[in-house]
Length: 187
Image (tube, rainbow, N blue to C red):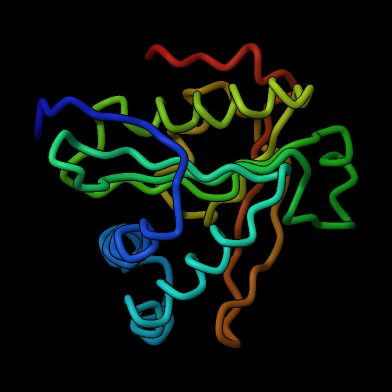
């Protein structure tokens, strides 16, 4: 555990190698029991980095990506939010009432449980509220223990769908906040 001072800021294209490291390392530490070794192995730095560079290069006013960095400029976490749903499931009509989406949030294992994830989510919430978006969803692997993080923030379970990764299907759940103004950031 670290007691480093953390700075939160919008991501820029030069952050893409650090974001790739966070994503790959977090996937390997968190999803090793949830997805196949083949899926994990494909998500290496060389595969992930150009995709995130392009994503950051092509952000619109609908998207925001934040990073959490230590005083020494080491990036240790990231999040991506959007003012409209990016990942829809047409058969889950319950998600129609939700506007925005928390698309990604990853914090390196050594920095988890230190309020960094909550702060990153709060930055996305602030962005959404500034764009008059009052509700949000997030998708999470069905068996991912991180779903408890969203439940503690007040998210309610909405439903499930299958996600296909490299030809393999995985069950994921969607959680939502009808009012992001009511998210409980202290727990």
